[in-house]
Image (cartoon, rainbow, N blue to C red; front, side, top):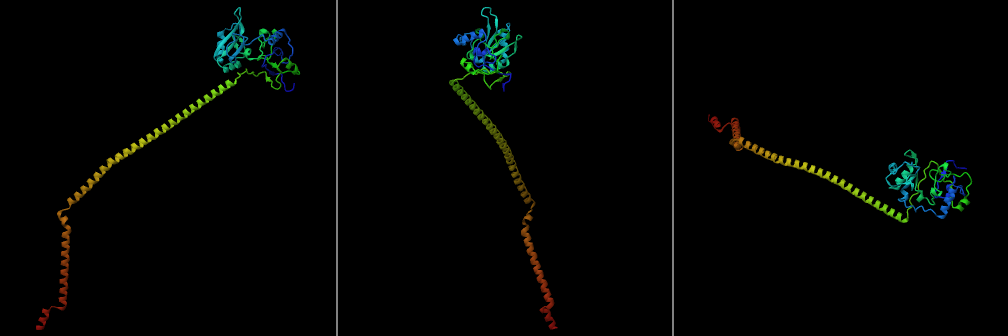
Length: 347
């Protein structure tokens, strides 16, 4: 068994009664009467998984809860399942005559995501001191399904002698012997997935909803509309942000302009108020100075220039006449006068 481990397992995707009774999924003949009964129901089409009127709701949002205590009620189960999501519908299977609990139930959630959360986390949890098992709704989602009451089902206890493999609780083990591909193909049994085994500790994923082309178109149209709405909202948000930004900027500029204008107005008003005062003051000051100057000047001072000129002229005339007299006296003293000459001659 090269490359295989004892912990390598695989899970059934379709149900076949003979394969469900085999530990490695390679049996080609039934080994108990219950498998014969299940094989007969499967080949004759005696069981309709969608014919149960009590099986309502969306199978992709529904989980199977098994190994419940017979004391567990609907309220207790709803309270325990509500921590995984919003419970939309719950059906606790009871005996048709006595009304006692059969130990299993079907719980439908609002969304498929909540169902997957419960499928993953509620496995091997405890309700009323009983360890429960959780699986997806194989009755409506697993092709070829045959229930336990008709010899099929999955799981089971060892003391019952009717173990069924391929499910979450008891998966198929990787085959240790040669796989009879021809016999399996003749019986319509899917062979083990060579090279695609899983670990015993891995959780198998429940089947997903198959979307038709119409659903894909609706989904793409919905996605495009959502994207368009998101784009429009982002555009509106960006436009509002720009408006707010420009509004703030405009208000700041307006405030600065108002502040600047008020400062300029104040300075201009103060300048205007001071300038006339200064101009009037200087004008008044110069007028007063001129008046004081003219008042200080006497009439004599006013006539001083003409009098001074006359006096200067007189002085110059006096100097000139005195100079002339001095020159005349010097000449006379040097040469003597004519009268003196005559006196000397007469003498």
